[in-house]
Length: 396
Image 1: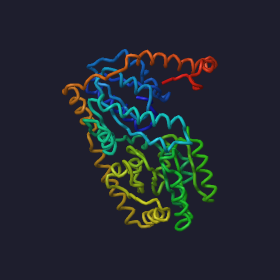
Image 2: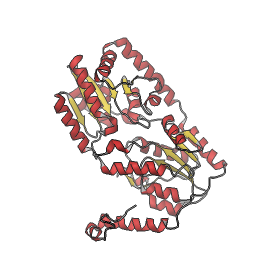
Image 3: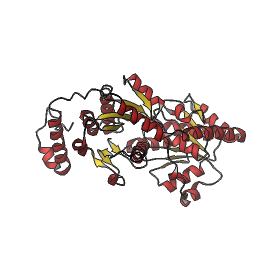
Image 4: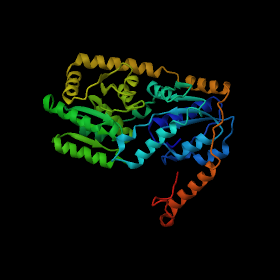
């Protein structure tokens, strides 16, 4: 996989798959291009996979962005189960994060080469499975996301509770501050709600800013332009702080336009906070008839929904009941049985044809790795290398 992040949904699923496979008696290692320092001891470098590769192995490839790790995985002779976490359309990141634009574009381009390479392709939601089917993957399935909630069962942070646990209505969003989450829309919705219905309210936007500082700056400009007070942008938080934010919240609001699953929605279900979310991509499937969905991004319309849910106790309780029921269904899914069933199925079936790899692939890969080492450890020498058509040396 390209990267193993701490506390994110993909990392959680990869580690969960490894635990299930090891309990079932399989040898299982996680090979990554990069990893959060806290998780590095649990991983191996993706280049080490080359030496361990074998046609009888099953390679479970977590696909989310374009990467060198993905291209190496494609070229190896192992059987493959692809787990697709979806790729945000790169258009969301233009002018905000050039590197992510390239990674998302490369990922979507690379994905088109995989249908003939995979023995099985799994989405972690029905929405993702449908995209795989549309792309021509012949065998698809859904590997259900069953989030763990132990990180929300810790003692809540006292400072968060002291600052925000009062008589005001707290509207919460949890997630990275990135354009596809449409944090700007959340600010507009809150502005409309506060002006018309409730000036004793605040908007709590909790999530990492790293890599999207320009977008966060634009959000502050929007807050200034609208002259809307009581909007708090809170960067990456600890589990204790996250627990506290969920516990002081009166409502969870999402305006995201592209999700492959969206774990914070079900975290809010678990913490028994009514959820109002924009009905698009995987969101309706994740909510599974729980909470409240809206399909028009008119600030006055969304503001009226917020007001109705918050101000009517009977409706508030009914929304929580639908969320409890949806969460029960989610937690009843047998992730272990489904995963092992897919693995057994791949083992029994004839494997797909070995990938066709250009003869020069591995020599180009070695050259690329050598250039990357020079770029990282001898940047002055890298800059002195001859350019191709005025461009930097190709790292592939």
